[in-house]
Image 1 (tube, helix red, strand yellow):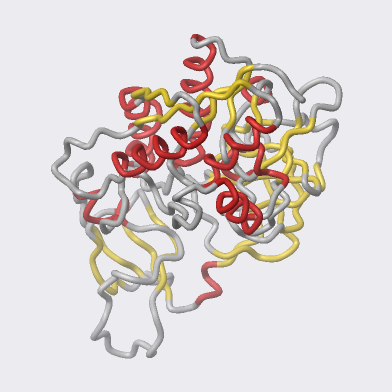
Image 2 (cartoon, one colour):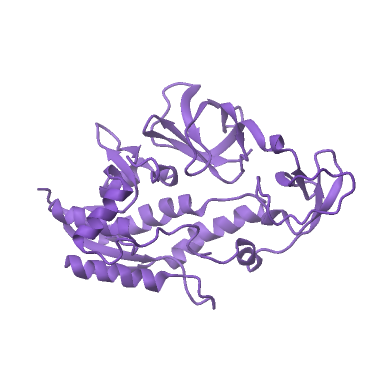
Length: 356
């Protein structure tokens, strides 16, 4: 049996619920903590924080452990949401989930847990930690379909030092079976998807509340103007829906895709050729290395989005301090503002923000 105290980040979902139960079985002194990261006073009905808190409370009551609540909404606004808006204002497509893990779950939560005397923090993420001399190593979760290592790529080795991930060794089906065995009411609760502060509303409707419109031309790669956009911030590379292009003479009967943004002329570049979406290279900055490269270039596999299959690649240093990546196969819709994550098998090497 293990000894020590741990505070589990309880989301109200099945993964964190089972994580808490497993740690109790392993002998830890367990408490739960529910983090409120978004204020609900915006006049909408999209935030499910209260329902999630109720679910977390029911699970903790069944386990006989204390549930603590903490409000990190101010920190989330400053350290995650403002950067999210800043990225969109610059025409990028940022990923707030990666930032939330680094700035809130493994910084603010960890600091708060330390003030409560906890030896460890734990979450329901599908990842694993290996402590084999020196810094902790971050590994993919064993369930390929649920592995969440992509979202933890920006967390530092120091932040991972006292973290536990009890469900990382399990398949999702096993987690639900355990939840049934523990008698949890949320054993079949649907997994949360999307960005917490947007919920089920249309993404464009949400952005309308925070970002101005700056209309400009939609142009084909040939330079022909084929429509007008409402603002570069409202479109992402690869987007097909909501472009409103139609009725053009001599245009083929095929969908239009967003394939680029020309910031100098405020033009959205669109194409009917899917091949215009594919590219074999990218550049990344704001690198976070969990395993420092011993030499360059680095042969590895990489992902440019969650759930993507591993892509064979070579990472190399560029003169401007960024990292270049060459892929063996062309990649669809490489999107500035998103993250690229590097792997050596199951081992997470690190990652960075795509800038080109």
